[in-house]
Length: 355
Image (cartoon, rainbow, N blue to C red; front, side, top):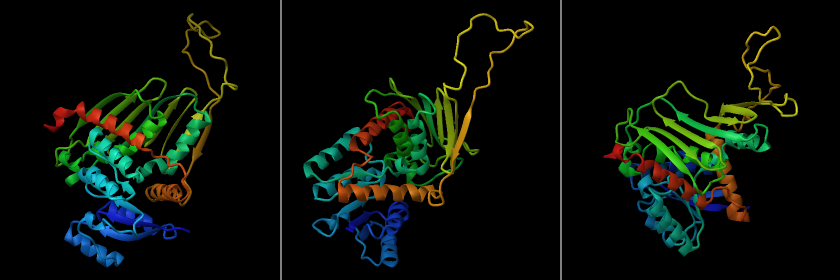
């Protein structure tokens, strides 16, 4: 089995705690051959934990022929520039999200990819979350009827004070957390060309000047309404996944989903009555019926129960098939571009928050 030789730029929470840890679980498919970090303490950690000689500058990778893929887990505001540089110097690139700060910057990355001819991917591993994949399977089965609305909630009650709270670092809830639920929402809408965007942002209790509350609504003809909420101000918890359909509904989290629905074949035909409704004694009554509801649920397997790990491994397994066997990859550049367009519009609508 061919091994993909990987270099990782950045040895922080993403480069070390996500990418390194995931790739170490797939030793038959991936081999870690290089790590880069500008921080001296992190470089000491690289030496101690991996046995590899750490690099200080990603440009020290240039000219090496023992690297098949570079993971760009640098600071968010450096993603686009470093991705461009890597592509133009002959490397296949997997970029952390957000792929760029805005649409023009992302188009520069796409231009660099076209010029270089090298593969470019974005780490949107949440598309591979077991619960999301199950939710989509249920929707596509038609059991819930036509989908009216999908909602994705990433809520909690917490304060934050690191660089991910600083707008100039391409940080804040929409840039940092938002790519995941937005990818879900746009996927459920089939990535339409024409999208109407409404977004409200706020800063509740963050140390920096970036948002920690986002309410985003997306609408497009022929697609379900998509609602996204990312909040650091609600600690009671809402179900991550919610679907409203014409014959059923679904709710749940990564720990499990439940849905209920009825079949037109088993329900009384719906007939409009405009006259006042009465019981057998002529007394007024409320419009009420008991639909023949079916209820089902899904629980993750033992392996899927660690959702954070499972979605990452699913991503890297799918990426391996794409690199080695030319299998189509779910996350396409045009999907990221649509996401960038929505993100840019959302920030434009809330410009006053950052002045």
